[in-house]
Length: 218
Length: 220
Image (cartoon, rainbow over all chains, first blue to last red; front, side, top):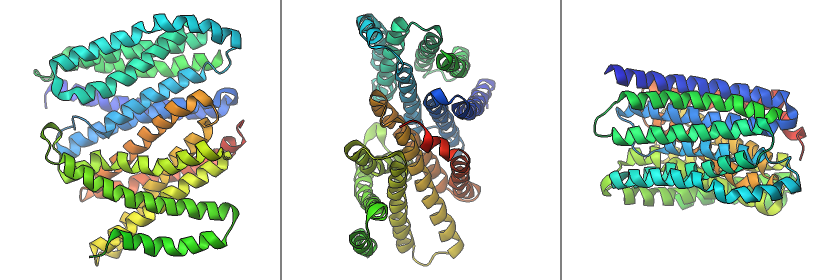
């Protein structure tokens, strides 16, 4: 096992442990902050998905000697994205009708985010058309998430909730770079850039917990 | 050769009589338990069809064992979720009702799967059958609880229902896939597959025992 492969493994294990810890903490906060319990239950769901995705990936590596190219672990990641979208929508529950009307004007500018996401993914598909399903599976939900994150970031008036949407946007951006380096590095095995993005993604996943906490407090 | 349909009839016939004679919540539970049996029967057809289709198909070429890990859990969880989604969308039930219905479908599915496994396997060791059936049963129940508890929280929140339901389905499918991945192996991994759902079920039951009131008392 090379040093880079070892660092990658450690990254997955750290990611799983951290996601499990943040999931349990989210569940505890759901009980304490009853006025926004749903938000933290959803956040616990997001972390459960991240932990299960990493666990599945590691297990296939251990049990099958190689990870599956497309697997239910990827579906778990998509489930995590769906949880993030649900949280973003839950944060708008207390909006007034006026605020909802005012938010409509940001819908069009917010389309920039999914356009960028899809552009990245179309580029990947053109490089590796064989794994189009993977790119669509990750690309489309990520594009939808980025749309909601940017739209609600622009339309939101409370700083706390904006922190959450900003954290999600950062998470999406790092994921795009992660995909970029993993796509470009497919033929070269492990690369330092790929590992840095992998660890940054773990950091951004952690950051969402604190940002969602601010969103709930707001 | 014992057909799947015969097992289904053997299991469903007495339950159908019970469903006719009983009323209220018990009838609903039995009805959805039967739907769980039907979902398992349907998934057997679909899984074998999909496995045959992808097992010799270029890039996506999979062995039957790999298809069991990659495709079966997704297919089974979707089929188990459909009756629950229908119940929630059409009948707009109370929160506790959703959890009970989801659990009934999951247990029905597990009952049929265990029967088929025991019949197909012939004279198996009692300890092995007990471990396998208990773990698979608990796994299906845990996935059903995950879906039911989650749906009970989000189904009346309009815009949250669609992405939330999808997310829950993905989470349940992955949990199921992890179990299948381990259960297909032998030795320590097989033991781990037995222990995993039982551990998760104990955790869920502990949470429900301690904080179940919070879930049902939360604002409707």
